[in-house]
Length: 190
Image (cartoon, rainbow, N blue to C red; front, side):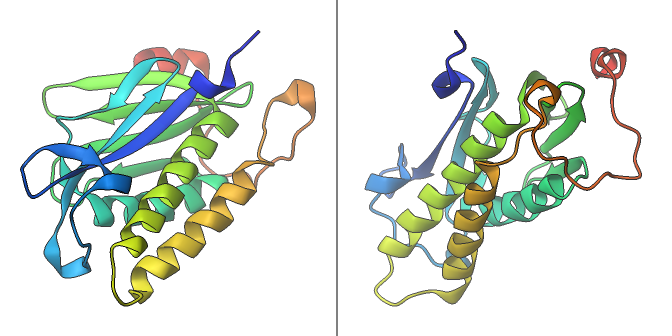
């Protein structure tokens, strides 16, 4: 039996005042768009680390970019997410059988895994909901941009629960991108 709980998982850590990485839910940082809070997204797909502790960037900007890209991906297009401050890229590319190739690219390193689209989307959107909820909880006054992103994350997370391209289950098909879909041979060349 396939363990969906471990198929894809996401956790956000923030660089606290002490300089240590701490879970966003328990950090001592008060979020504000102007503060450029640094943090990381730990992201694993089928046990393979895609993003980790060394991939630090402005965490609220990264999650906002991630949301925009996830909306595009759910709409049927493959996406490339450029990190806000670093030279990193995260690529989501569909392959057959309701699966997605997830690829992290840095100048010196690449990390690649594939997983079910639904599992990857559920993990990433759940991570976004958790991040923006924690960020809103640190603010004495509601920050409208965090509220907007939180609401978008909740909506995308709800949509991801119904998203399944596994042909054997007859899940809903997204809009088709005019781009060519990647075959398994294309993935091998990644």
